[in-house]
Image (cartoon, rainbow, N blue to C red; front, side, top):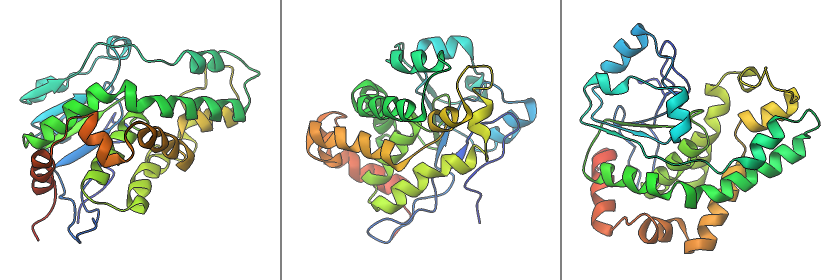
Length: 251
């Protein structure tokens, strides 16, 4: 048995994507693919446990400013590949909401939906690199953002979909962030702001509506997830076959 949520001292929403059943009846392999929030607060003990995973690659989805504010030391683990890119997130509306004590939960939800509709375009360069590394069998691999739930959540949803997981399984993994972050945990990250606890829960959590918004944008762009993988991320049939063989248990 394996733990899906890995407890790392100073870690944040660190999870194993193994053990999910796909349409062909095959299970995703344990200890091959991990998703996470920021690792900038890992303690020495957290790094020690992380080192036992023998990671080969890291995809850091955080923006330039996020990495500058909260640098991590993951490259010291000796991974072969540490990938990140310089970009600025399009979160102007969210920043405005976070600075206002009059923000309502509905306004927060609409802003999150808008953010998710933009993720397939904004994060396409990162997702393209992630799938390339998976096709090259650069595993074990971890991909992360700051919270490990939005940019990372959609990436995990795309991977599980590519592996043949059902919509229910994809949603199950996505919503697990609400549990992995801990009951009420989203509120704590926004304690210094003017927003209410209800608004903090919307912004700091996950919702099926958010993921639906991202997939709706993907269908509008490319007709389907498979079309998005092919047209926007450059995932060829050969790459997809290699990814499936790398991440799925043998038949």
